[in-house]
Structure formats: structure tokens, C-alpha cells
Length: 254
Image (cartoon, rainbow, N blue to C red):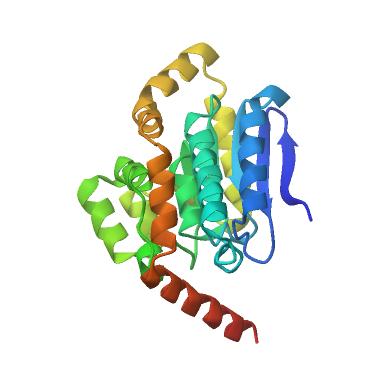
């Protein structure tokens, strides 16, 4: 299985999540995406579009498969996932999230570290709903959410584990644009092409300075942060709620 497709649009490289049915983030996909983001500039990319398929960007972490991991393996996975977020945040080239549909939890997390977010207009939802499934939103992810929305609004959404619709996400600034589903990727490419027409050194250095606060959050990440997430994942409450979630998913599939 491919898991991740790379589509070249001249100097813009599209990284399309390709793990049906919902692009759930398992260790292999997360590792492939991190490596693709890191290697793209060396392959001639001047910008990256991160996309999903029509109706679904990513459903977030692949809970059923991750529940099979022991504590060391879960800690290792989380380190790679945070490494992916850091690769997005520190990328020397701009990245647009082409949010082609629903984007809960880990899917929404990835978009926070991109330069720009374009979402499909319609009955799609996005948000950090970790609390609803017994998980704590880690500090480094909370910081990225606050950066976009401000402290109070970010707090209200994260503490409630709220999933909001596309129109509300656009109104409050969680996403930058709404377009029809079939136009999301094209608009993302167009936005990057417009940006890349600017004098490259001036644009890149201004971008680096503007994103310095985001970079600084990763300078403070340490092993204790990774261990804390694994500890919370294996808490009695989280395991109970996540187990119930998996049971409901299995029942729904019949």
C-alpha cells in the first residue's frame, strides 16, 4: 500500500494522504510523511501542499492500531509524530494544508503547523476533540492552537473537545479560506504559486522571523514531554474511553 502519494506541480509538491478509508495516522504513515516533508526541498520543491481525499483530510491517530502498542512503542510513535509536527513547523519552504474534508484531532493538529489552511466548504468539521476520547491536548499543540486563535478562544475549544464546522472555523481564523471541495487542492497550489513570485530571499527570511515563536516551542520539547504523553495514553481513563471508541467503530462497521 502506498500510504502517501507525491504529485509534482512544477515547483510545488503535493503530499496526498492515501490510507483509506479515513487516512488514519499509523506509525508507518506518520514516518513516511515526516520523511517526505524533510526531503522535499532537496527534491526541488519550493512549496508543499498537504492534502487528503474528497470528504476526508485525516481522521487523526489510528486508535485501533495504536492501542496494540506497549508503552515503549507508543512513546516511540509519539516522538515520530511530534517530529512530523516539527518538520512542518520548521520547513524552509511554505506549506499549505488543503483540508479536503473532515479533520478531527491529529488531522487538525497537522494543519496547525502549516503556513496556510484552505478547507472544503460544506458539512465538514475540524477541531481538537482529544478530551472527548479521554486524552489531554499536549502543551506544544496547545501553543500552536493559541497562536492561531488567541488564548481564550483556544482554551474554550480545547477544554470542550469541540469540533466546529467549516464556516465557524473560517470565521474564527482556524482556517484561512473556504472553497468547494473539488477546488481545495488547486487553490492551495495557486496560493503557493502567488507567494513564490515574491523575491525569494526576502520572503523566506521574513517568513523565518515570523515563525520563530513556533520554532521556539520545539526547542523546549524534551524526553519528559514524550514520556508524559505515553503516561496519559495508558491511564485507566484514556484506555477505557478509547476502548469504548474502538468497540463502537467495530459495531458500526458491522
